[in-house]
Image (tube, rainbow, N blue to C red; front, side, top):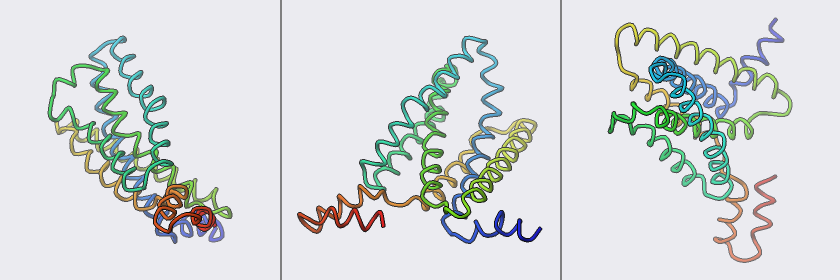
Length: 216
């Protein structure tokens, strides 16, 4: 049993970057699960057409617009600007706090939730691709799924308790923000962007050498 539990649960945590990602995945799944429970309850009042509008915005905007846009930004911009862009998109999800009338439109609710979660998952997958090892990738990915499952369960239970106590959904934002800060620390600077910056700094002819150093 020890030969199984050590590579499955202990060795992946020896990397600081992976440990940050696992903690971020737990918090992010908790926050998204928490908000998801209240959203499922809320959109029922809009009927079938309203629910379809919500799902169209929630997954259509995330899949066809935000994910490609974040990927483009990651490969074109410096890391700090990229994370600023992700944070800006998530701040858009706070719009209902400033203008509660948005919650009366299922299309806008779906748009806000797409902005809230897409950047987090994009950053997380970039970090996982960069910091999983060839030797133990199966164990490392499996542990991330365990963290996601337990985070989601914790979010659902917390949402149920909050609903029973008639608390508002804004407290889930703490989990999302904490998750973003932790997972962002684990994402490496993009090699092509780093090479371009060093090329501009070191002068002509240094870009190819810098790119080779990054990929090495």
